[in-house]
Image (spheres, one colour):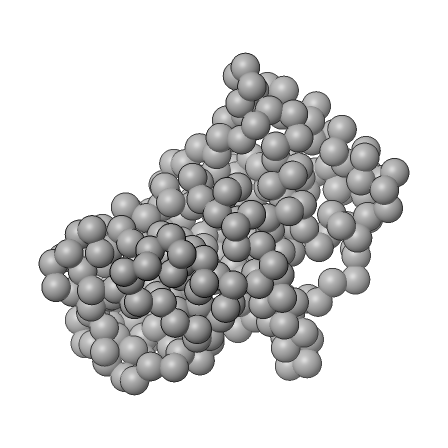
Length: 272
């Protein structure tokens, strides 16, 4: 099991190294919708030291800085760190693994992770690490996608693969992608890491993409796990998957844009 998790970690790292700009273009307008609720959950204020874990393109750190906080972004992907420096050259971003943060104990008053927990081999360890680097009274919050029946974009691609493709492709096995889509799982994980007073709220989000193959292209070119699943399909099968996705997207299409409900859960808690 340990070897499999290491393979998954390496798979995710290699994937993120190759797609920083693609992710920014395809998902930036969507994942940034959770930023306000995340920062509200940790009660960001002027002068507060905040850690942006799995910082990706740096969106959270930038928003926290606008609120007067002092952010540090940490990501295991050098490509993502470089992308963050490109977008926000005045902010501090460093390479570092969420599962083993290269930081001392009790340095921050707040820590956040925006959809990053979904891509970790050992998410429980990352939550424990967030607890470690916080001061007593510090707050931690993370965002995840709601269940696939609610996050329409994921539901469409998964149904298309199930109907026309081979969903059991040999990819490194990681934790279930929708594990934390369950609010109780979020609460229990936070409690087990030593946090108190966990809360989980749902945030409405809408993903706007080009009509037609916009969703297919975003999933194939700007994700890691889903992209691996799609790219492993035979070309004829991939065409059928694409056609099925396009057909299901028709009811969400307005002119040349697709609008997909993609709600998120925001889980937060306090270090006693």
